[in-house]
Image 1 (tube, rainbow, N blue to C red):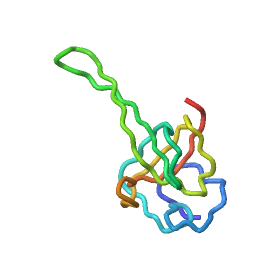
Image 2: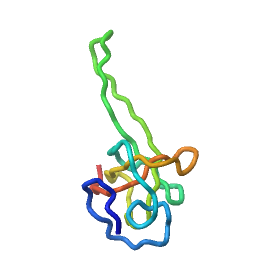
Image 3: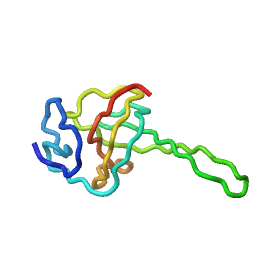
Image 4: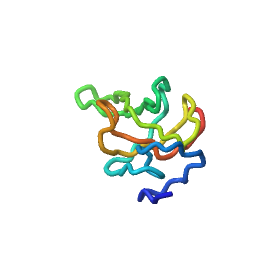
Length: 111
């Protein structure tokens, strides 16, 4: 098991030989660390997380809610992830057209 340079719990699941795993494979992580809620699980090895943020609209003197989605690679060693779980993702090299993040921790809990 490799140290990825971020203070997270080590995964408890089994590794199936996936090279795109930051803990057991050769995937290097760098850049942003984001947190979000799992919104979709449909793809193989990839999940969609949803991030909510609030910004102030100066013209209307009110706040506006915005929702953004990020596609992230889900390594097999992280284990089971359910809809509504909070996960922590970190930036990596592009793994596909839309995936440039990798899940590093399942914080758990249904939101």
